[in-house]
Amino acid sequence: MTRTVYIYNTLSRRKEEFVPVHPGMVGLYVCGPTVYGEPHLGHARPAVTYDVLVRFFRYLGYKVRYVRNITDVGHLEHDADEGDDKIAKKARLESLEPMEVVQTYTIAYHDAMRRLNTLPPSIEPRASGHIIEQIELIKRILDAGFAYVSNGSVYFDVPAYNRKYHYGVLSGRDIDDMMANTRSLDGTGDKRSPYDFALWKKASPQHIMKWPSPWSEGFPGWHLECSAMSEKYLGEEFDIHGGGMDLQFPHHECELAQNTASRGQGGVKYWMHNNLLTVNGQKMGKSLGNFTTLADLYKVYSPMTIRFFILQAHYRGTLDFSNDALSAAEKGLKRVLQAVRDFRNLPHAPGSRNEEICGLPEKVVEALCDDLNTPIDMAHVFDAVRVVNQVKDGSLKLSDADYEALSEIFLKLVPDVLGLVDEVSASSEEKTVEGLMDMILEVRREAKARKDFATSDSIRDRLKDLGVTIKDTKDGTEWSL
Ligand code: ZN
Image (cartoon, rainbow, N blue to C red):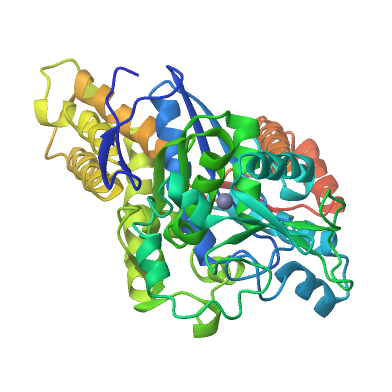
C-alpha cells in the first residue's frame, strides 16, 4: 500500500493519484449487465478490466469491496424513458415470466464470467431487490427541488439542477448549448424539458414488472438503481465507479446528477471508463450483425485467450476483435503459460544478482500502477518469458535471487493479478471431483507399482460403472466422464 497508483479520472480528464476515501480500503462500483440475453463480447471487456483492477488492489494489500449490480428491472431503452422493455419483450417472445428470463441469463452471465477467470463481486445487488431504496431516493430528490411529478411519473428536472450545479460535467456537455440548439419541445410528453429523465415511470396496463409507489404503480428509471445501490453498499462517498464508455452519457451523467441532487455531492472520487470493442473495425452491436455471444466464441477460442487478448490493449484504447488478432493472442498466451510451467523446474544456484532480471517484477507492478497499463505489463512479462527460455536452452544461468524475482512474476503477478492460468478455476463441485480423481488414480498407481493388479483393475472397473473412463498413457493416466 506504499505504492502510488494513478488512475485516469473521466471527471477531471487526467490521471490522478489514487487516494482512497478510507485508508487501506477501496470501494468499487461497476455497472453490471442487463440480463435479457446471452452474454456477449461486450460484457467481456469491462469484466476483465475491473477484475484486474480488483486483483491488483488486493495484491497491493488493499481491502476491496467490489459491487457489481444486476439490472433485472425491465427498463425502457434509449434514455430510459422510451422504447422497448427488453426483459419483458424477451419474456413475451419466449413465453416466460420476466424473472425466468432474468434467472436464465444471470446464470449464463456468471458462467461466462467464471470461465474468463474473473472473480465474483463482493456484493451483487439486483435492481428489483432495491425498489424501496430507489423510492426513498426519489423522495429525497423531490424534497430537494430537483424533480417533479407529472401524470404519475417522476422526472428529474435537469434545467433546475443545472441552475445550481453543472449538468454535463462528466461527459463534457453543456446543457445551455444543448437547450439553445433545441428548436422545439414537441414530443416531450409528460416532461417539461427534453433533457429531463425519468426517476419513476407510471406503468401502462400491459406492463408486467411494476411496483406500488406514492406516485403510481410503475417502475424506476434505469439510472436510479446505481445511485441507490452504490450509496447503500459503499456509502455517500466512495472511491471508484467503473463501466463502459457507452455508459458515460446518459447513464453515469444522470447518476452523478441524482447523487448530487440528493446528497449535495457527486459521491464518486474516480470515474473510470473502459473503451469499447470493435469487430473487424466496426463498432459492436446487434444491428451490425456482429453480436458474438461468448458461448459461441468459447467454442473457437478459449476464454483465457480472450482474457489475454483484452489485456494486450490498454483499457482506454479501442480493441478490435478479428480472427487474426485472436490467433496471435492464442500463440502469445501459450508462450506465457508454457513459461509458467517451465519456470518451476528451472535450475538456479547461489550467485550474484542479474539486475535486469531482478528489476522485472518492479516493472510489471509499475506499469499497473500507471493507470492499469496492461500492454506495457505484457511486454515485461514477455521479457521474463525470454529469460525462462534462455535458461532452458542453457544460454543463461539463474542465481537464487534471480529465480526469486521471476517467481514473483510467474507464481503471483501472472496468475493472481493478470489472472492468466492454464485452466479456468472450476466450480467447487468440479474441483472436488478433480481432487477425488487425483486421489483415486494415485491409489491405483500405487497398487500397480506393487503389482497388485486385482486392486488396480477393480478401481478401473468400478470407475467405469460410474461413467468414468480412464486411459493409461506414457504421461500418466487420463480420465473423462
Ligand atoms: Zn449503472
